[in-house]
Amino acid sequence: MLLAIAYFLAANTTSYGFAILLAILFGLGNANGTVLAPLLISAIFPAQTYPRVFGLVNQFLFLGMMFGSLMAASIAEATSYTLAWYIFVAVPLAIIALWGGAYLLAKKDFKVIKK
Image (cartoon, rainbow, N blue to C red; front, top):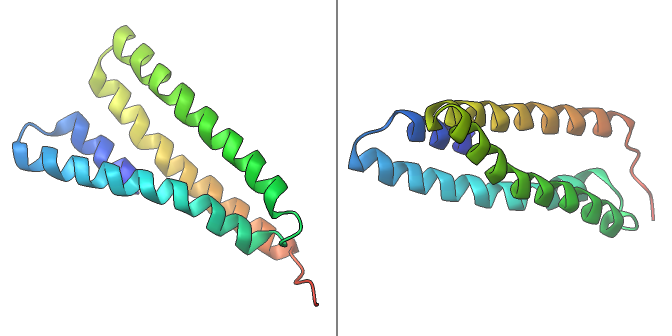
């Protein structure tokens, strides 16, 4: 959510104060994105499969980071940066919905392993 607000500010702000707020929200949003994946994976999967699942999820997170900047540059070059920022407002909101749905579906089928 913080990233969506940061991208919205990037598309609309012209003041120095909002630019500082944009930088703070962007930093917190990126930090949240790197911490959230291991926490969700540990909550969903047992410890035996954690390394395998974490590696797979991390690959997709890094692919998103790699292609995100290329997509933003391509969209900005074809149209404008404002449209690129609005598209990137929608991306974190979609990710929130997908992660939340995946978590709820996984928790429904997850059985705690007794030691």
